[in-house]
Length: 149
Image (cartoon, rainbow, N blue to C red; front, side, top):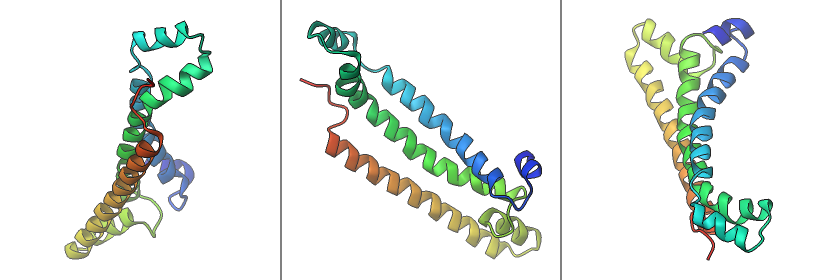
């Protein structure tokens, strides 16, 4: 509601900002955790073979962190949809799903309100499934999660 008030109820920016802020947190936390998952013995092996910092990152740290990053993206995709709907629900663009839910719920047309809730759920599931497929494809293609031999 604060962002909608600041930028105007008809502006898309408030909803986009809420979705971006909500999506940032799981991506950041999971990526940070993934970057810390390399074991000291693996880093020592790279140092012993005179690998540069860039080589260590590209060949060890990034492949180990990639599954965590992709998990964060998968969680963030659904969370962004939910956040955008909630932002619309509390006053957003007139053509949004969240606004339709609020309008139909207030006017006593509960069946239509629940239909839009179901539509929002389907959109969230589609985003989740697409990012799950992306995660699977990237993990198989790059062999993510396997430390180098």
